[in-house]
Length: 462
Image 1 (cartoon, helix red, strand yellow):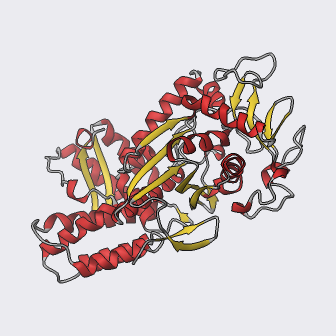
Image 2 (cartoon, helix red, strand yellow):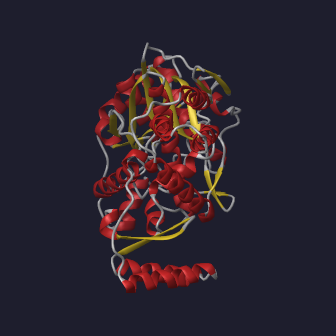
């Protein structure tokens, strides 16, 4: 089956054809590096990684660009409030530049722990100020901007189809309705360049034709995607929260300057939810990948959990579901490593798997094909070779996994036994306390379908 993908612009699943033969330009909105990424953010990057792997499965060479937002993202989508980098600086006592570097490194550590393919290019907003200024200057030249006391704004009234991506009416975005307009002509107008507040000095500010200040959030992606992929490329990705504001504004800018909507396909991953609410750092209830690791969960178990839900559906997060994903991954690893190498992949199973992933990345159904294969009567070496083909898309690193072998001291085994008893009676505080005692002794404990597993911390790279 040929590849078909859902395009948010058209609201349809349609056949994918690259704009250039055998080559795909893919731009993915990256993190705002003022704090750690939460696992809801990371779900989007897992979806985008699978997309890239499926494109490569179909023979495309992918030029994959991911931006790092290290300036210009204000705490309000309505262009009000302070820059998130300045907020992070105040919270930690570090400079905005130090904050950006610290959380960029942390994000890339999470990226690699989830076995996400390295992009062709990481691009930082602060490295592309000149390109952003040039973009705004061209918009000004063609009459799409106006100036207020606090910045240069894009005039959305110039475009009859503004907000088509989100199917917005021209009454304005919900984000704009929450604040007074001030000098903005319309609630949907957005900042291209913000002036530094009078009487204060920001850590991140630059000279421009309009005055000293910093770029708006949306202009960075338009400028950098056009620089590295051109003004008309194949696929632009991000989270569903980008549709109404960030991506609608990217499209408006690019239409005004280049006459395109930037990308032929706009694709969006849906939220991870916790207790029926979207996970967000602003709410204070977000989970980091490291917090899962600290509970003994393999990062690839979280990846497996993400694969079990279609990227365009909500995924409800709870620890029971995560532990079930860990158990399933463990079963898969044990089965895979018990099979000998040297076989040839089964063509029928490969064709069925490929058909599912080519139908808008239907990973839940692809996983069903995987488990049917595992339970099949095919020769062991054939099953292993076939799973190798599948794992090029799944990214679970099955061929690299090795079972740990080590001697467990008697006192450590006794603590693990006590913790198992605490879990059996659902005494979670005692279970967590004993986990920390074990960590202090240099041991990590993981929970799986077949019970607890102990391993030395140095064996986990801790």
